Image 1 (cartoon, rainbow, N blue to C red):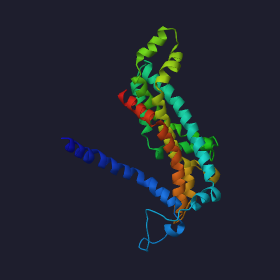
Image 2 (image 1 turned 60 degrees about the horizontal axis):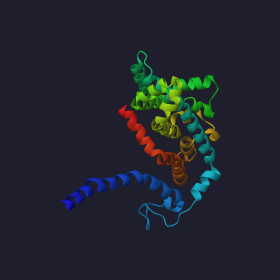
Image 3 (image 1 turned 120 degrees about the horizontal axis):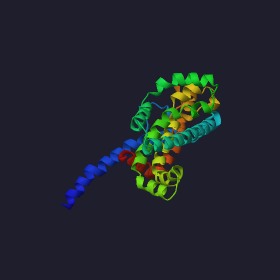
Image 4 (image 1 turned 180 degrees about the horizontal axis):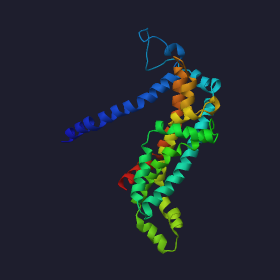
Length: 283
């Protein structure tokens, strides 16, 4: 029985998990190898002698230095960080208050309004950027970070509101009622009782909003034109792909460095992220 259980564990757990991890981590491994591979190996024909696409014996930092010395990659990183943090903060504040109101306050059509808010998240961004571009042009915000900071919440707030609605519903109402009985106002009960309990949900919504803001491409491509104002996704693809010439080394180095902040955010808050999603689903 013990040997049979061990065999089943290998077949149904260890082997599928290993294949899943290999499939998941291979793109990052490929980016690392391509980032440190010399040009002589990158553009070597596949049928040449000593060709090894999965390893290099002559790693180099030329491509990383090219990013920071020959392009505006440092400015792109700063622009992306500032835009992502600002739009995430705006979306979280609006999402927390809207989610609390829709889940805690009893008013007509609260459930229908919550569903309508979430449906707006499902509207494709390709349908929204044309009217949003007209608004940005009228307010003369084009080619500035504020053109993205003010448009990203249009698709971030609905999702944050939906996440927080589900999580606030999972928080027992008795906690808030006890605070109200002890003399706290609704604002104080929300600020000191409900929100601290809902921290996992807030972190979950914040990580998701930050990820969407960091990786967004369409709005950044349309609203930002000068190289100094671009974000990492737009800058890397527009400045390192010239016609049919692909600078694969700097491209992979930029993609790798651009994915590190998101990976760090998930690695530090993964437990809160899973707890927040679980609480919102239960709610």
